Length: 252
Ligand code: ADP
Image 1 (cartoon, rainbow, N blue to C red):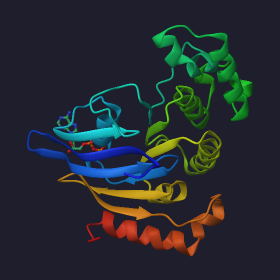
Image 2: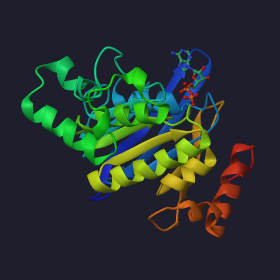
Image 3: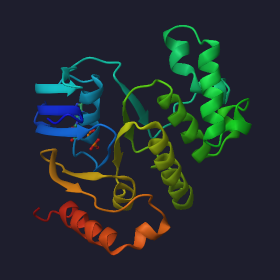
C-alpha cells in the first residue's frame, strides 16, 4: 500500500455452493482515482462491490479503507445502482436528502447543500419536480447526487448508465467526469461497456467468470479532459483491442 491508497482488498474471495463468485483477490485503489471494472455477467463484479460495501461477508481476506479494517462493516461507501431507486412521492430535493431522512433529521444545511449541488449540476429547475416527470438521464443525476451528499470518499457505481440510450449515456459520462473532478472522490465503476470503461477511467480492471476473477489491470494513459475525440484516439483503440481480446477468452 502507498500513502495515497484509499481502498485495499487483501485476498478477498467468495464461493456460493459450487460457484466461485470471486477468487481470492488482492488490489489497491488510489485516493481520487477513477477505476472501471468491466466483464460479462456472472464474473463477480457485484459480489466484489457487496463485499467492499460490507453487505456480504467474504469467505476470507480483508477489506481496508484508509489502512483500517472495514471487512463486514457498512456505512463507509456511497453505492449507486442501475435502477435509480428514487422515491416516487418525494421531490428531487427530498430524494437528494434521502439518506439523512432515513438516518435522522434533514437540517437546513442539508437542504441548502442539496439545492446547491442540484443547481450546480443541471438539476436546479427540477428541485420541486417528482421523479416521474424526469428523463432517465435526469433521474440518474438525482440518484448520483443522493449518493454524493453522503460525503463518503469512495463511490461504488454499479452500471449506473446501463439503461440509457447512447447519446444520453455520453452526456452522462461527461457530466460524471466533471462532478468527479470537482468533488475529488474515488470512484469504482462497473460497466459492461468497454468504450465506457476506457472513456471514464484511470485504470480498467477486466474480469472473467468461472471462476470470477480479475484477469487484467490496465493503466489508461489517455489524457484528460476526455472529449468525443478521445473515442477515436489511437490509444483508445489500442486499449479497446486489448480488453476485447481478454473478454473473448484471450490470454493477458
Ligand atoms: P456479476 O455482478 O459480475 O454479474 P455476481 O457477482 O452477481 O456477478 O455473481 C457471480 C457469480 O456468483 C454468478 O455465477 C452468480 O450466479 C453467483 N452468485 C451471486 N450471488 C449469489 C448468491 N447469493 N447465491 C448463489 N450464487 C450467487
